[in-house]
Image (tube, rainbow, N blue to C red; front, side, top):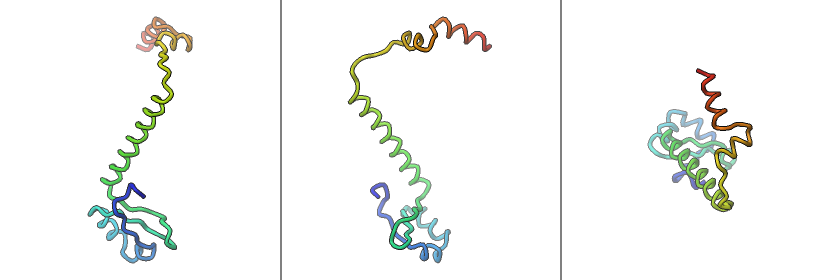
Length: 103
């Protein structure tokens, strides 16, 4: 669980005894709380700010994976926009004309 900052573990029983307000206060203070059942993690409580940080990291990692995959498979071949339009049965003119029909 490398994404969590020094997580504090509590059992489901302890979490129930402490109540939601206590767990939320701990998360708001910056602690990541891992709830366990029979010593196995079943849930995590983090602050909303921490969730946003995790989401940003995941998004950045996704983008990085795409860049690396594209770099690894790049042959240098480029396709022109006109070739793409032709493949879909269009030309620049046909697209321009279809835009006029919508107004």
